[in-house]
Amino acid sequence: MPCTVDCLSTYSCDNSPQESLSGAVFSPYVMLKFAGGKVIQVGNSSSHPNNHAAISSFQYGFGNGTPGWGADFEVIDQGGTMYRDIIQAMHKTVTHALKEVLGTIFDFGWIIKHCDGTVDFHTANRLKGGELRGMITDVDQTFEGGIIKLKFKVRAPTSDMQDVPQDDTLGDESQKIPLKVALTDLFTNHHPRYNSVKFLNKDGEPLEFKSSDAGEDGPKGAWPMNQQNPLAAARTWLSSVVTKNDRGILIVYNPMTADLIFQEDPSEKKCCSTHFRTYIVNGGNCSPVLEFNPTVKWVVATSGHGATSGGGSSADMTAKVEPLVDIQKAGGQTAPAIQQHELMWRHPDAVASGASAGNSAHLDANGKFERPLPGFTAQLKIHGDPTYSVGPELIGKTLSIVVINPFHINDQCTWITKPNCNPILSNKNYLIRGVSHQISGGSFVTTIEVMLTQPNSHIDATSTLGDCGNEIFVGEYGASVADNANNS
Image 1 (cartoon, rainbow, N blue to C red):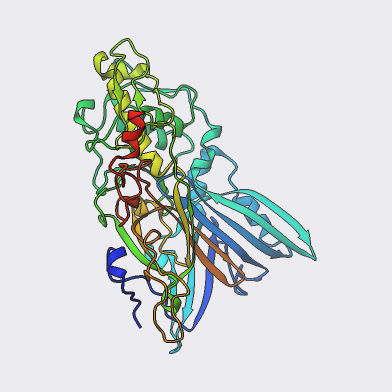
Image 2: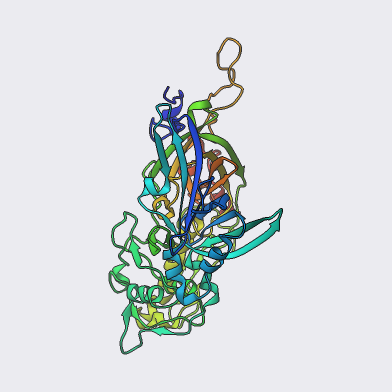
């Protein structure tokens, strides 16, 4: 029976909500493979040929639109046959990080048996066309009852970044190089290295920088690292530039290819333009939703939302960039520092305004992804879904969540709670912030962290919740809170 509810068209971007997977018997599946061919899985057939080790629990997650990524494993090993292989496969040298990442792969999902006896492998590899890659770090072990319990982490090369400050300068005044070339060099020729570096715009096409900043590949200059780790150096270089579409840039890790991606902020203001899926809360057996836990805090004053000053330079000191949306002007101002290398490619009179515009765009992007602001957030727990395995594919994607008010049917099977759907919690525009998966004891649950942009904090004061809802919370008495604050 298809999932349907009378207010579905009001609060969702499609009329096809997610339903529970079909099958007779569900068994969670996890596989970890080391360089050299050693494999650990769940169940009795793990760790051939002696079958003395198995994965007892597994967690995997990522922050959407961020370099944050990782998995945690717990392995039960009888006789210590796999203990030596795990220690041998651990990450030990920064210069070998890429080799270790490419040699350590894992997969997870469901093994589903149907009533006709057929078996379906509903795993990340089968669904997304690739296995996930990382390096093993932080192995803890305990010995009890003749069994070794191993707990270890699998992480991206990003986890090593803080330990490798760099002091080189890429390019020089006599041989300037474009920003894209400098960033590619930074992450493919300096350790820890990535397999490749990609630059994508909001539509998945090659990213172009704003032409006023000296071309599609970015400004040409000498790019100092100043004893920063590669990620911090990259952020410093990017802070004062914007894309062709005047947007900020996110840095993300692709675990299937071990690539680093510089992704233009793909967020869209148009409702349903980045819709991914629809879920019904309290939808019964036809819905895969297990829990929905919203938390609401109305953010008034946030760092950087008071406006952005031009920073210090010998040029125009009056430049100030207002917030990108009509919000209450509360919170601290952000004053970006002018980098010396900017004077190589930007006119002195435009240094302050250019740096301010760049910082404003990146603050806007980071406020939704890398540095999520508190506000209207929620956890959506669903029946395990391995399609949520590759973060770059989910950046900027939104969910429609339709919340049916509980306790709504009396003994005559009529609705006694009006309206049937919660008008505040139901919304078409929940932004995906992060995803985590937990497999343990035969259970597989996926938790999706979502948020709604709030009027007067993230979006215009007179907008609806999420810029896609049906209720206005600010300005209902004829003036927005922003107007009242400015007149006080």
